[in-house]
Length: 239
Image 1 (tube, rainbow, N blue to C red):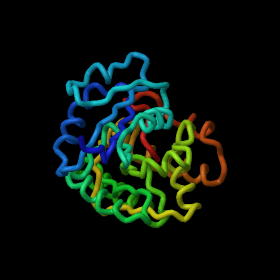
Image 2: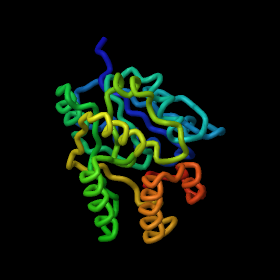
Image 3: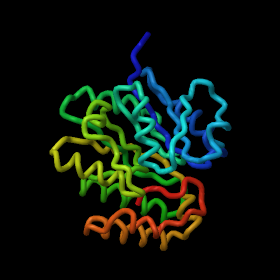
Image 4: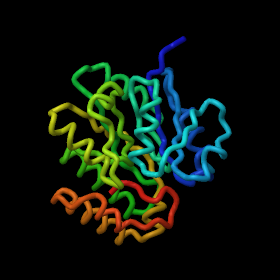
């Protein structure tokens, strides 16, 4: 039996309407690499797990919280490389091949992709472009860019810090501080514009930049989390 190369970990919270579409898109990826899909449900109802049609998906539940859920998925993952994917985000069709080629080089511990938003509106194209530029300049990609990382390294550094938000930034800052190398591919993941549509483009964009600055200035994630609303699926995406 072939060893599993990739574990794609999807933290979910009331994502029953879109989870099967995501699973189908992952099964259609252009790759001959052995992959497992792990869906981690943080809702008490476990409604997303019940909605999944495929028997090949690994389904587990955990306490609510993106970092908690991703750590739970990573704990049982059998793959050599972990890919953390939001339920409303699709990987580029050749993502696995690109990651495999990169990770054959032992000097890289992980990486991510540029951000794309599934809309033809100029404002969303601009947001995606600016977010990608920001991550390249800072070398700190966010969770909605599909962060991937060697499981051995992820386990060794203790995984995600279980904080209410900014867990992706915190992990990437640790990697950066340790002088380990990551790669941000120019290929774009495609994420839903739903949070901008729900809360407003200007509000979301300004809030996200302000929260990011406040976090870098030392404000705790617990305080920053009070600025997020709980009235849309998934509760939040990264800022």
